[in-house]
Length: 98
Image (cartoon, rainbow, N blue to C red):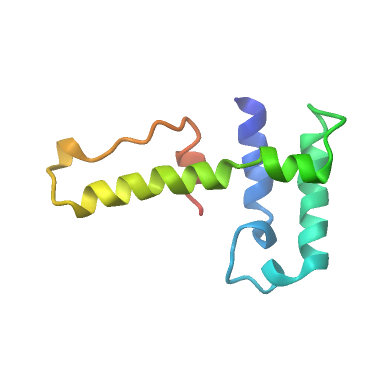
């Protein structure tokens, strides 16, 4: 878990990978540089991983967005505060910058 949280911190510092309004988000060169940075961190624990494997395995953003949608849907439905969906992802709070 500690390593994943460290990777999330690196990811947070690379808006070219997650902030769609960033000019760098659509810049392939900047995005490749950002992936290289994240890959360097990821290879500390998994030395043989490639960029393509990293992109497939690093699906934290997708999982976070699914959980966030559940939370938002439960708040829109007009239920009481006791019935609001509680995220099950242990790294949900760490990804709240998205």
